[in-house]
Image 1 (cartoon, rainbow, N blue to C red):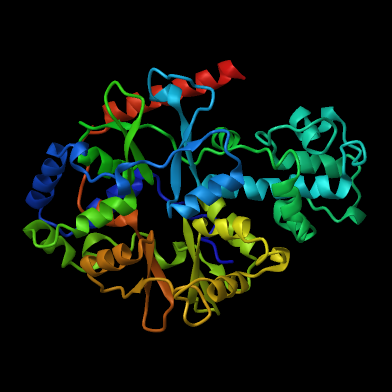
Image 2 (tube, one colour):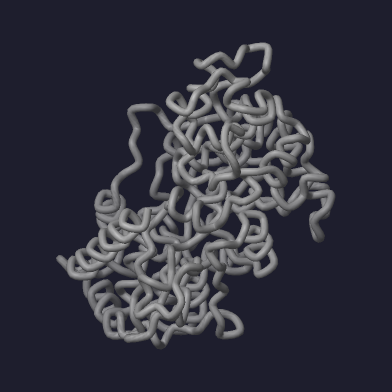
Length: 450
């Protein structure tokens, strides 16, 4: 697996956005007029989600059922309803947050460790672990007490179990990936069919594995705010509520915005910007050495762990010293491991290439026995061609490759949106201050209930 040099740190929101803005070869007058125009467009003008109804998932839904809902509706995330709220006065009482594949991956990887201990030891007592060593929740997961929610279980529980007397002969390691290697088919039996894992609810995952904040906007919020949240501030989706009503009216995603931009063909400003080569817009943002890749021979769980550790939604799959692109894996692909255990019962030794081949043999339109090849473009491609490619496949990224198909960069939905706007000084300050207050209020409420 190829990662950036340890001394290379991905830029902060400000550094990323400032760099993109400084590299743009756009007339200042065009940027100012376009930004001013977006500031005047209300969110209410943005098209509703398909069928006009936002898919919501009750907090007491099981993890597996939540994955099924996301997969069946072909969505990556959904708001989570508070099952304890009868008639909430506002959205803070009605919603717990957002469930997405990112949070599910965190849960799967972390609990592979706990499942390994539970499978091999059977109980905290057999493992030589007391409640004091693991904690009440961790001990419950190992069978010392009755079923318990999985929220709060951490790698420390497994580390304590091993230190407390679980011998090497039991075959359980201290990290989730190695632990999972010793589970085989029983991983699914433990993780999805036995307590406490079977009873794990969406609510517990949302409360324990927050990937991004849940702060809705209103119908009169400007589209400029939305575009900034989905680009500079790294949100992948933005819930929209009606004033004085606790219901999510719309759910704006990065994908939806880019498809909306594509519909602007024929307008002077869009045609001018979209005709520019990527380099004139500061793209690809990351240098060759910063692009995170996985090798085709890496374990698929390592690929998911890589995405989790780097907070990214997908990685290119490469082969050889020149990093020739042979495929890609996205964070959304975790659903196949959970929904098709019959295909991946040997996942403990499953490589990334084997994972892609297995999917390719079962999914329609795979053709060559692999999943659809990843989207690519040349370094001199126009922004318009990139937008067309991304919108046609509803994917979150396109890989920039040279003539030898070596990965030299990546362009994401976030990057595309950033090309059309800039942030006037202090524009989002009031919104972000309000968002932080709401998040702190929610955290305080959670503490009060526990």
